[in-house]
Length: 165
Image (cartoon, rainbow, N blue to C red; front, side):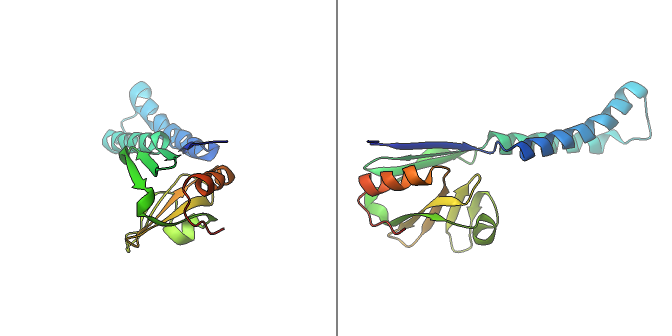
């Protein structure tokens, strides 16, 4: 029996990588024309700015990593590069836990690090399953998961907190 749950998720879908590759290719063609064909009709500055912005965005998205750990004392998570240090939710600070299906677009406006106006947060990478945590202080956090059954079994066995399915 597992005494511990650990999960690591990344934005590694083929379509995300493809979108960045196509965007980069679209920028490299005019840069090639400027550098090797001496085409002076293409302005260089906007291309360089777009290349820098694309590189930064691609690095942030492709480098993002959601890590979740559960043991009998706490739930820990971090979302690199936005939350680099582990955040710890002590068992005693949790009112309710639930592994549930959710709608990332409808409930949180998409994937990533999401904060609603009421202070509720969602950290997700892909899919529609997550660990919904209700704090005793009425805040809520949803951590996306690709291992919902394993997570459900772990929290039911280790956390001893009411879990509604």
